[in-house]
Length: 463
Image (cartoon, rainbow, N blue to C red):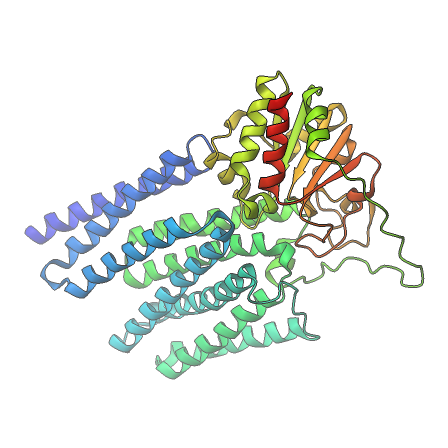
């Protein structure tokens, strides 16, 4: 009777936790409710952990509490110390932990229960395979985002045949494992899956890394769902399905925003190579840029009616979000209509710029998406691009041979004046030049974003 009551309480707790996780995802879909969504997720996870530990009763090992406590401390320290520029690589690294945990749990189940039924073997096999791909793929994504490994895609001549061969090997070994449940088949397949995870991510270029991080998030979710079937844990199935499906949907949205095929990104550019430029024709000269000082920009801004600010990864690197917020507030106090334009793939992570602006207490109602601001560009007096490059590159619309051809971009060049703040004239993350710098409406404000914007703020206050 006591066991029945305990099971009922645990099931109710799992149901409550599942509902809270759904509410957390719903809350995270909007800046206004993101904090509340985080709270729902934290409460749901605490309930899930408590319910799981209660089910083990006296069999709970002290090492489990030590692992949970140690992991909580390490996670808190990492979250507190990591900068916003390092957040994408941290997320990628955390995905690898999910995959590794799934692999280790699957292998432990195999060693403890080798004589299980076929259905259980299938659960173990799927869990280990997805987990292995997620682990190595996430580690390589972490190294790419960190800059330890080149962001250029590694495109081997027969890469698709190699992927197909590895996939075939995994299927064959899966059939062998399903027949006799031998550990060697599972380990061999896991090794191939690890190589496949590395090769898939290695073939993806730096410009597509935000989508890769999102896809790895989806993989980690499906890994957790597979582990739920393996462990007969309903909450793990629900949670994994939520993360996996939401990650897949986000990846699709981002691919659409980049004019990428989601299959091309997953398989490293399959069929997505842009047309090659005619090498017989000489490349057009890059052109000269026009510079503007902070004082001149402040004077121009003070006489403007509408200003749109386009933040990019350079703003995150310089930690300039607070200076940018102060500039926007000074302008609004002077009666200027100020808006922020956010591209779906600005930064290195989905929502990267939104989080930065929220951290600086920029009002949510003036932070708009690309599709909302593009129609207003022709009537905008000044656009300030801060540390962004590829997302405002007109080559996406004008040059069919560009690597970002067809990618929707923020059409800043249609405004009356475009100010681009960058450290240098260097190419963006996609590694291509930006014709925007040489247009007649564009002026460059070179320098560190934080220092440059602070000078503009000081000049505005002095007027």
